[in-house]
Amino acid sequence: MPRFRDALPQLTGRPFLTDGGLETTLVFLKGIDLPCFAAFPLICAEEGRATLTQFFEPYLELAKRHRAGMLLDTPTWRANHDWGAKLGYDAEALAEVNRAAIDFVETLRRHHADADIPLVLNGVIGPRGDGYAAEAAMTAEQAAAYHRSQIEVFRDSEADMVSAVTLTFVEEAIGIALAARDAKMPAVISFTVGTDGRLPSGQSLGSAIEAADAATGAYPAYYMINCAHPLHFEPVLAEGAGWLARIRGIRANASTKSHAELDAASDLDIGDPQDLGRRYAALRGRLPNLNVLGGCCGTDHRHIEAICEACL
Image (cartoon, rainbow, N blue to C red; front, side, top):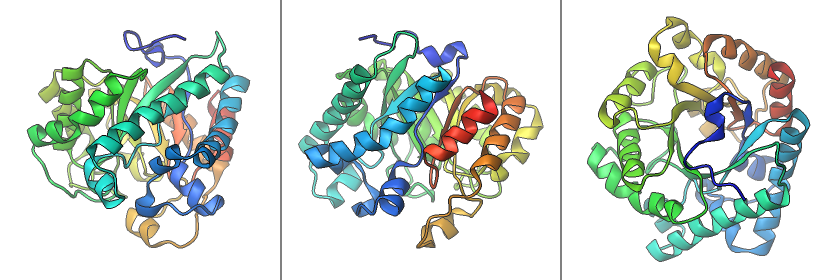
């Protein structure tokens, strides 16, 4: 099977898909209990792996239908030390589940191998704290030390790259990028923003991207925005600044609700998939390098299909 570490195929500009909102789909649509909103424990049992396979299948079929590449994300957003400890996983057990998660997506890639459709194995890293609030404040050095072990597990696996998602403050992003650079792993940084288009820390998106690039020698392969509806960040993309060219991916929420409203919600708001698709198409006009298209909370294969129909 191909290894893409030396040349990530999505950097050519070819359209790539991601999956949708894994955790929200499993909890709200499949009725699966996920303590701490963590999907990684599913990797540890045959039934859980079967559930994850069923989740990924529709997205892989969409990639084949639209002749798009796809990022195969590991379900490891919560598989770090703090969240792992809350679920009873020590460092050794976390390392094992992160390895198993790469093995899982590598098996998916083998089963869906197609010479014309690149499938990239992406080791997912989540924030140390909550994905909606700027918690667990760290310096960049502390963040690098904290996330290094997970990145090194991915380095020693078949993973092609790592992505840090729902990051809420720039120091954590810088630390992850520096640890990835030390490990010689291609890395992507994805920030989340509030309804004002700013990071939960209060920093502007453009400033965060510029600061991360300045501190790391522009090490991230590219940046993404995730876990926010386009309505919330469209205004800040109208500035026409140079940092817009560094954004290659969007994984938006289905709902226009704020993070606080989503956190308190007992039902899933799937929004309007067709409207979301149209907004993605408009975003491609504002972001010259946007070619990684996917979803976050509340989205499922219906949203990704609508995005494909609007954009591809």
